[in-house]
Every structure is written in C-alpha cells, then in structure tokens.
Amino acid sequence: MQVRYPCNLEFTQSDMTSLVPAMLNQDGLHGPSTTYPDSTTKDNDDMQSVLSLDDGRWSAPAEECTSTPSASLEGELSQLNIRQPSPPPVLAEVHPDRAPPISPSRVADPTQGLAISETGRYHNLHVPVKLMECFLRVAEANTKRSLETCGVLAGTLKKRTFHITTLIIPKQKSTSDSCEATNEEELFEVQDKGSLFTLGWIHTHPTQSCFLSSIDLHNHYSYQVMLPEAIAIVMAPTDTRKKHGIFHLTDPGGIGVIHDCPERGFHPHKATLDGSPIYEHCSHVYMNADTKFDMIDLREQ
Image (cartoon, helix red, strand yellow):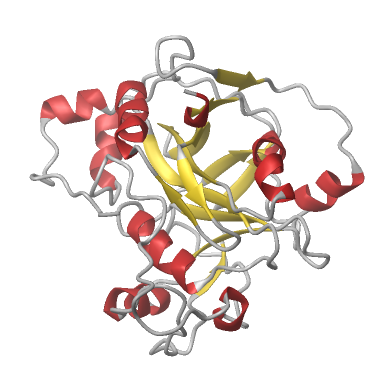
C-alpha cells in the first residue's frame, strides 16, 4: 500500500470551496449507510467500561453538531496546518521478507504518555459517544474470529472545532494483529463527495491489550503529518485493564522518531530525543453525546 500525495499542496480558491463542510449524503454514495441519532440507551456493562475514560477529561457539554457552511471557513482553513485533503492509507505495509516477525505486544511502548493539556496547540475534536459502540458491533464477527477490523474517521470543521460525522469501514484484509484496506479508491471517493476531512482512524485489538504497535505508529504518522489533530482509537474488548484508548504521536518526540525510522513490520523503536513517550493519550478530544454520525460499510458492496 502506498501513500498518495497530491501534485500541488497549495490550496486554490476552488479547493477551498470543495472543502466546505457538508453532511454526507447517505443515499447518493456507495450503498448502505446508517445514521446514529443522538438518543441514548443504557449500555451493557462491557460498553460502559469501554466508554468510561481514564481521567474524566474527555466529557464535553452537549451541543448541536449539524454541519452548516461557515462564512469564515476559508479564514479557519488558512490557519490550520492541513497539508492533504485526501485520506492516507489505513495501514503501513508489512514486509515479511525481512527479519522474523516480532509479537506486537513485545514492541508496545510501555510508557505511553498521559494526556497533557496544551491549550491552543490543537483544535478541539469531538467524537460521538456512540461511535465506539457502533464500531464494536460492526467488528463483532471479526473479533469472534480473532481478526482485526479497521475504519476511517471523517468529519467536518465548524467554528474552529473538528467533528467526526462519518465512520467509514473500507474493504479490508485482516489477521489477528494487522488490518489492511483494499479498494482505496472507494474510500477516497466517499470523502471527496462528502467534502470530509480525514480526522483519524479506529481499529480493534481482538487478542491484544490496548496500545499502539510499531505498525500502528507508522500508520498513524501518515495521518498526523497531514492533520496534527488526527487521532488513533484502539478498541481492545478483551483487555481487562483498559478497553480502549485515544492516542496520537508526541510532537516533536514521537513524530521525529517515526519520521527517521526506516523499518517496517513489528520492530522496536529508539527513545525520543527529549525523553518523552513516543505516543500519548490525546488532550484535545471530547466525547459528545449529542453528535450525530453516519456509518458507511463499504464491505457490503
């Protein structure tokens, strides 16, 4: 799988117009899509533990997140460090012909950082509370067979805050510790037609604990260098200590390590120059119980 970069990284006036936030047309794209409303129901005990975050900093006041074009959108975009409007690949390529494979758990960073508040550095990003529960249901069949499932998080920009409005499940090939998207053209088309930003990705660890493997770190690098606010959500339903995490690379520490690393597959990483962990829990993410979102499962076509 290759990272595809646009020929010209400069936004034109027409490019700006094409990036105006818009809710995804559920019926006019690639088939089945599901809208998840803002009504809430009592979750089972497992989901309560999945949706209860470690330090309580994730909750946010409920707000209406219906996307409407903003007159100041062009000004907002000009101040954001957005380098690529199209989505990067879902997973870094694994090269099995190199050194013998290493178990993902052996190369997990044991000192993943806690969320450190950096007011003003990142724009806030709102995640629908029901999105993670929805993704676990979508991934259930694979999880029972100990296969990973991945999805792309897409959304809009409203009043200098990113909102995840669409969960896209691409066609994919999975193993117990990896997942690779196929037919990426469909994924690009969905986001292009919906004028959606790529805000991150989500995947399961059906047999592993909640962490980012070396492959995950390289994969997330391709998202975060395009949009600093991009997040990686890991769902680990069998982890008794922590069933999910919302992570990103530390900057400049983790970003620098992954940028300079030529390895592929599962491998250990050197320490960061500033002594920080390679990745950490996000401090700019808020769970929003009232945010609506669409789910588009491209595997059903």
